[in-house]
Length: 442
Ligand SMILES: C[S@@+](CC[C@H](N)C(=O)[O-])C[C@H]1O[C@@H](n2cnc3c(N)ncnc32)[C@H](O)[C@@H]1O
Image 1 (cartoon, rainbow, N blue to C red):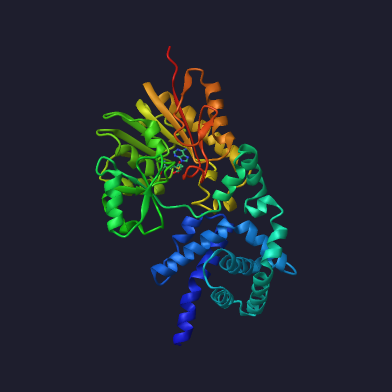
Image 2: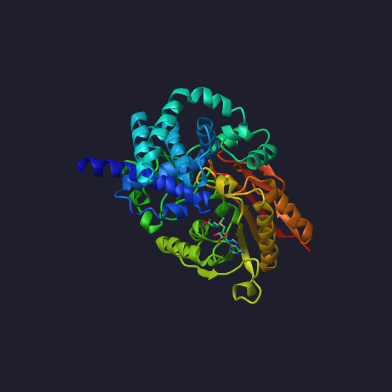
């Protein structure tokens, strides 16, 4: 009895990981699948389930190719869980510090938890062969660069074409586990003072080389172990995302529209940068807007929260005002944040991009007339695709002869079209695009 329950505890995070990956294959985001993993007994099991789920998604294409090369024939659709289970075993053997014997035995055990004990011999055999032959098998499948970097062909090609000089670095960075990065509210603490508090708490971190609000942790920790996290003194925010606050360049008392606000990382950032701002935070997703409320509450800040469509401000109270600053942090392919959201490569389709570009253009066109005289609209994406970035801004400027781009300092990243592109991993950031727009002088 005792042994059985111990095996079960070991196996459960693996079972959850298989279920999470199957949910992603069915089109669900990994975050939402992980949100349904509470049945696990303790934090360590939950962390392991998350690590395995993220890892399989991150390396999905390469693991899939390795496992497929070892199967005499593919599984039937109803046994797709066994294919994912083998990928889980392969992930543990090739990419984790889990001792190989534990990786093998727990994966075999999980076939029983899936209700398929008949497959345990097959699972054991395939994984043992992988253990013996992974170098030669890997050399074969890695000849295809998209497999080596575990990207779908279309995305591999899009990144390779867009960033020919740096594509290998970008693609390699997308395979790495990203660091946890904090933004310090400099109105309440200097970055050095907060770093000292972290050190006292036994958490090691370093200042980001360029972004003066950012601290990069050496190893991830639970947010509630961060001193004063609960009062909003620090927030978890990639260093590249922290540039939005800089580029928006708010002054005290200004009226600000955050047109695509949820979950509110940038809303809180903006509110912490200057006093007496009147911020309206709009998001089309009422559920996600709740997270903006939670973020602001944590930081003790207030904004008007509106569930609405930024592409249709007509006949709304917020659409009847003019704003000194407008942030359009647009829905996009999210290809720049695949380090943090490795499921993107499984969820996104080449055919999604046109629809996303239409939404971005509609939001930009609808928000532009809401800009007050002398105001600034900041367009942001976390995309690596030029069509969503420089191409989108060029198309906007062609449609709006009354608009012009403001030259942003390329403190990080490099100039791309009328804006600045940050590439993942290169300056210790995720991938973002920034372009600032203003009205032409009459
Ligand atoms: C990149 S996220 C914004 C991230 C957020 N600014 C932050 O820093 O935490 C894009 C957001 O746009 C929202 N969205 C998508 N289409 C929208 C629309 N037509 N109007 C308003 N919000 C929209 C999505 O629900 C999503 O929350």
